[in-house]
Image (cartoon, rainbow, N blue to C red; front, side, top):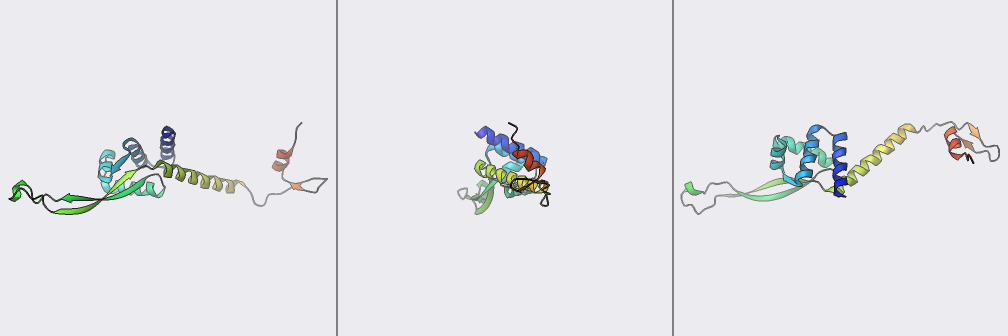
Length: 154
């Protein structure tokens, strides 16, 4: 089942998105979860560009983002700072982690295909269709297509 979901997402990415988006999707399928810095490194682009691409994929429902708060030391209290025992100043940073939630992505694809199908149907169906054929018995009016569908060849 996971193989089908992976195949679906890869097909959707290759059909509707640019090459950079395809790289992001393929990388997240392969690595499951990556931070913004790691994702940019693996794909080979700047962090800002990777975030922008992931933002578009998040809007479309294919990629999910979780923001985590991490504590980092700035390294000011290391070996050369004098007393060696102090770890330095601690600061809080926010890092985005990207992953593919397959349930959300598949629901998003189904919704977009439904909208596309309704749009195509609205383009094809004429609202002012002439009903040229009239039943002699019940006086109902039919279009040629409706009449062909109701014919019983037996």
